[in-house]
Amino acid sequence: QITLKESGPTLVKPTQTLTLTCTFSGFSLSTSGVGVGWIRQPPGKALEWLALIYWDDDKRYSPSLKSRLTITKDTSKNQVVLTMTNMDPVDTATYYCAHNPRSPKGVTYFDYWGQGTLVTVSS
Amino acid sequence: SYVLTQPPSVSVAPGKTARITCGGNNIGSKSVHWYQQKPGQAPVLVIYYDSDRPSGIPERFSGSNSGNTATLTISRVEAGDEADYYCQVWDSSSDPRVVFGGGTKLTVL
Image (cartoon, rainbow over all chains, first blue to last red; front, top):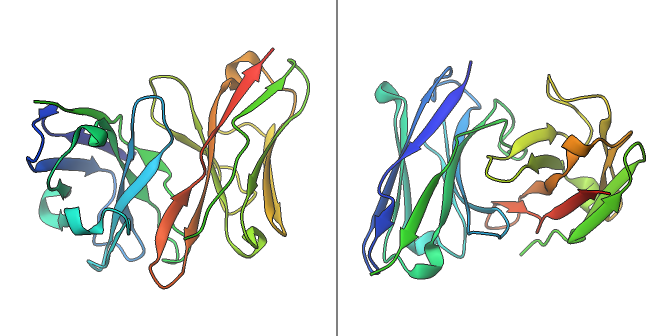
């Protein structure tokens, strides 16, 4: 059974760096074809993809946020970490991590999602 | 950048068929995935690879994809199907990325 859970601060100040951790079970990020992605959703708005890391440490970022994002993995701990610098109130959102099943890199989708964590950016 | 266009809302009576479209340039050449999201919950994958259903998703959910439009079809709609639905593709351009549509609110009358 695959599960994912996001953790991190619920409140950050403008200009601070956000660090979120996705802790998962039921799969290994060393298995060929597997990936973990981060997606966020501002209150009342649509889903927005942020970043993705594959089993081979290949990484992809949203072009509009690329300069602010870093995604890393710790296979031994079954964790994926996302950092986002220079946080702004517009970054207030629920942040989800999700499992990308074994598939060609050109066919990425997410079959299991974490419950999400609401991050508020405010002074 | 690649854009997916969904109608903001679709309404349907119980027992009828709902069709939610997802428009994109030559989307028929891509694999389309669909997610259902109920209020306060994480998204759930309901269709992948255009028309495949994950285990546990009712057969009432089906998908198709051709030309510039992908469609999620929900037959014999139930009150419990009321939710937001998002389509998603992988844009394999010079800067590959995951792209989500803007979402469609399905209302069961």
